[in-house]
Image (cartoon, rainbow, N blue to C red; front, side):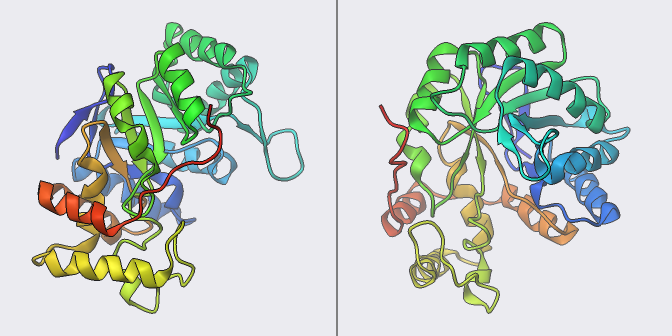
Length: 302
């Protein structure tokens, strides 16, 4: 499996990672998925403290018992739920980040995090305070690097200019091309993109042609429009799996270090990983762009 350097860090991540939010409630099956991922060369494992209100981190921690040194482990912070009866609230304060990291470490059963990510972000946040928190955690050896998870233009620009982030996680696929506006800028700043949602909730797979299609479309695309795009993709696939071609699309840009599709079964994980053996030509990438919509994030702009 190809490994790419994450920004300016010394972390190298597999180009196909594993997003753990899709793991089910079956502990044995979920642990098997993570073990299979590592066996197949996946080194980037991503979770968040908010997923199942900490239970997802605990599950990942159990799965990595004895295998911690075989992966780059990432989690996220910023959403607080421990003081409300239901739901959660955005709480990106320095004190909360430094408290939350200890709870994540405990749940993940590890002494350090490879990557700690702000799970969102707005321009109204105390950004200097947030940066100080992450830098303090680096100095304390609790995290190796930090990044943000955001699609908001002014937030991205602020962190690129004011912090030492090594990564930005963004939803990115053929059906959500909003990140393309910033990929060159991010790359010029020696920061990497972690592409989440690369299969657009299964819409960029064979599922779109079956009765399992959502019927809801995706972003600004109707089901009919998605089927039209994927029909064209299928015509030039030359036997390659549609999901593999879809996973390769975000990786075409050098700013993107890894894509993190989810998996709810071992077979799904195996299929995702097989995309590592597939390539897209420049001509195919151009066609995919011609067939899909250019979208922009219209809020949180200067």
